[in-house]
Amino acid sequence: MDGEDDASNPMMEEMYANGIGGVDESPSSSTSTRKNRPIISGEQLDIEAYAGIYTGRTKIMRLIFIADHCDNSGMQLESLRMAYDEVKKGENTQLFREVVQKIDGRLGLNYSMDSTWCTMVDRKAEQRKEKLENELNAYRTNLIKESIRMGYNDFGDFYYAHGALGDSFKSYGRTRDYCTTSKHIIQMCLSAILVSIEMGQFTHVTSYVSKAEQTPEALDPPTVAKLRCAAGLSHLEAKKYKLAARKFLEVGLELGNSYSEVIGPQDVATYGGLCALASFDRTELKNKVIDNINFRNFLELVPEVRELINDFYSSHYASCLEYLGNLKSNLMLDIHLHDHVETLYDQIRNKALIQYTHPFVSVDMRMMAGAFKTSVAGLEKELEALITDNQIQARIDSHNKILYARHADQRNSTFQQVLQTGNEFDRDVRAMLLRANLLKHDYNLRAYRKL
Image 1 (cartoon, helix red, strand yellow):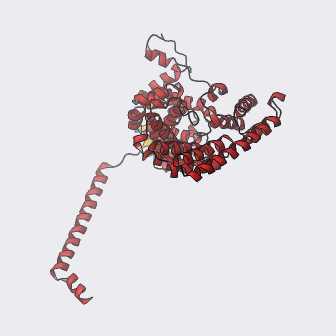
Image 2 (cartoon, helix red, strand yellow):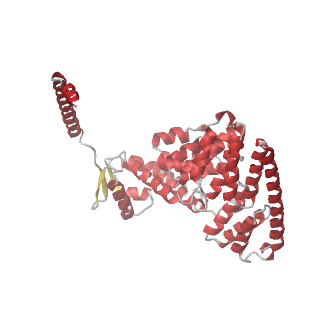
Image 3 (tube, one colour):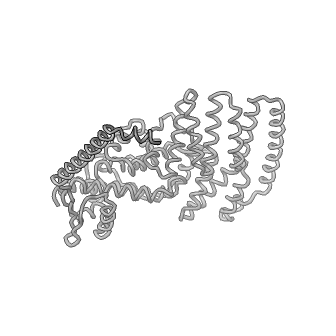
């Protein structure tokens, strides 16, 4: 393999440094410390720490999602226990009944159906709703725009707290006609975005993000960060990974934990990092991710993602893929990312294969299979698919298991370009002569008079 030895040595060093071969170096040097770092293990998700990032309805929905998609019964029950406790802090009796049904008596009497609590909350809700309706009718009678806006806003909050997301969205939308300041418009947009994300209606998210961005005078840095997060989630849902990456990379540190009802700063790092790996080229990855001081602070919250990005850029693919493999089980439990994990992983792996083969005239597929921790037969199938899709310009010697790069014939392509340019020149000259003759004989003028 021409030039392969030079590339394989650093990779093998990285594999040994990550615990495969065992390296014992002094931790005094930062480089040595990095080489000695252990590959993360497929540890079970710390549900309590994970849930602590979020607040409100999204915390409950994420816990329920983990319970529904996790194979570990212990994690399922822990998620449902926390969801039960969290639901009882609010007023959503419908969601409470769903959680109790999922628990199905497995957590004992303390986590069983509390009919008394449900009846009390529902009774208070009816009284609260009646009071809000009376107040809103009074405001409408008096035609006080600000009071009407606040009345609809209170209705939106009421419906949201009780899980009636459709009614909540309508109520927030009705405040639009009564907004008198830019600040009111921003508040309306953020409320509508929150409900739309919970409903999974990401077309509404995009629409309201655009509306909010049209009033820049009322946008403070935390609000801008929230809007970019919302836009990033919308693009992620639409599988526009490059646009999603750009939005997450633009999120400012002002976000902090201020948007915990939707997303945490750790999510910004994970979503942005994986989308960037899957969609950015090498230059963009360096300039917009690795050298991005702002985003680097988010990556510090998720060291695994930071390291796999650095390993990918440094062509340490074995280590990078090891990180991805260990993260996968936990990423599959993420309510927004789970549908995209397979696609993102495939795109990242394909990019790694393309980058690996790019510098070489020929590549020994046995060594390449070792670098990517796969079989030669499996690697051959992957390379065949990439060659068929025209992503790799190469051909495979199946007998000797060597990949040969197929470089373009520069001499032939130059001649082809010269011939094409000559044909275009000939066509343009003929068109000019034709037009000159038409004008000379007043053809257009006579045709006009004839009409």
